[in-house]
Structure formats: C-alpha cells, structure tokens
Image (spheres, rainbow, N blue to C red):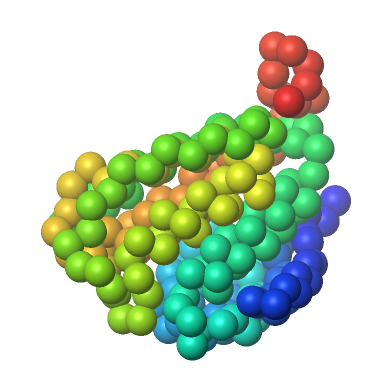
Length: 196
C-alpha cells in the first residue's frame, strides 16, 4: 500500500503544488521563496524519512504570512491523505529532541480531532527572512488540516535558529513514530472502534 498524496492549491494569495510520501527516504525538493522556511521543511523531510516536493508562489511582497500558513494547510492535508484510514498505525508519537542549547518536546495524536498547544519564546523576531511568529501559524495550520492533536513545547533554548530547527525535527520524529504500523493493531487504535 502506497501512502502518498499529491495536492494543488490555488488562491489569490498563494499557488502551491505538493507531493508527499510517508514512506520515503528523506528526499526533498522545496521552494517556498523563504530560505529559512525551506531549510526547516528540508529538516522535517530528512529526519522523518519522508519524501516531500513543495513548490510555493506567494504574495511575499505583502509578507510571509500567507505563504507559511497556506504551506501548513497543504502539508496537513497531504499528511491526512497519505495516512489514510489509520488502521494498524501506532496513532501516537512523541519526541524530546535536543539541538545544542535547545530542547523541544513534540507529541502527536492522529485522532481526527484537531487540537494545538504551543509554548515557545523566540529571542528574535526573524530568522533569516522568516518571521518567528509564523512558526506557530505553520504548526497550527498543519494540526487543523491534518485533524491531529499536536503539542509543541520548548523546554529550554536561547538561539532562535536552534529552537526552530529542534521543533521541526521533533515534529518529524513524532509523526514518523505515530504513522508506523504495528502488527498487533488490527484496526484503528481506539476503545471506541473509530477515530472521531
């Protein structure tokens, strides 16, 4: 069974093409027009061992908000489609990931009920050309589009680059764990017999 998704989204603010493979090898081809954001999506791809192609044309003359938010929407939709009916997967994933001074916790429940909790304090307003406040918007968009419960909490850290990168890597590792198959799980992992 292939767990892949290909999506296209066009609005007056952004045009996005996305190809996502849950069971990839960590290969990415990403162009959002925001260099540091590309770097973060590449880190997500490589550390989750996904394959991701993402081409984004956005209204960057306004600012980066629509580009980052809409990329999150599309990636969340791609994750949801690639995961499919969730039968046989672990459903939960978590990671506490260190990167130099930064330590970030990420926990995921692929429960079909979106919820997002986020605790982070960046020391800078920008990392390269990415506004740090948009990192929250990205993960919020992913969580709601994928209908996942997503918690991200910065436990410690001073350097904004390190904190952001630890977030994206922790999210990748937690998602990889949550989407793995377990031979002991025959249906969806729920006492209700359904995820809703």
